[in-house]
Image (cartoon, helix red, strand yellow):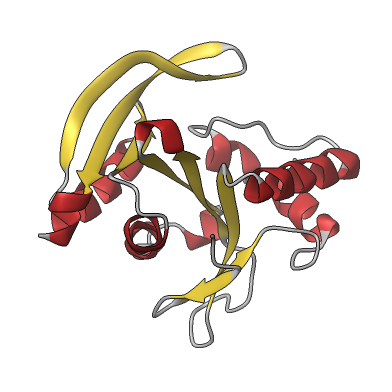
Amino acid sequence: MFPETFETDRLRFERLCRDRVDVREYYDHASHRNPSIEPETRYLPWNPVATMGDAAARIDDFAEQWRARERAEWVIRPRSGEDGAGAFAGTATIITEWEKDLAVLGVWLREPFWGRRYSGERADALLEIAFDALDVGCVAIPVHGENEKSRRAVERYVERHGGRYEGRLRHHAGRFDEPADHHRFSITRAEYDA
């Protein structure tokens, strides 16, 4: 259902599972061993992992959700010719809500890879998977209410694909038990096809 690997012009995506990603590598980037983890995850709905065991459990959760067709999680790596080629640049996510005919996109980029417009390149690839492989009718992209840089990036690719901004949803998301607003963008299959 979900592709194990795929590539764009500048990026390679690999399924985030134990067969493809070492637990230590994930732990080093998704925990406080990563000196920029706080700014990287400030607007994300998950906490950094605390231990190697937590990192392994999170990867195992991703594997279970993959098998259940609920979520696909890929590691993003710059391709040859890019600064940091082969490095763990972050993750790309598709969460499926089959009963709503909906896929939700997510991304985590590590700070050294900010400002390269990787988010839009990743979104183009995930939209193709969502509409062509998963055959969903709508893709939603939530953005934390205070994350202006991501909001501008999402606006660019949503507009490019004919989608729209739906509004600010108050107290729609949270982290550390604190409510947070979300901006919601969406693209329908008809908009994407046009």
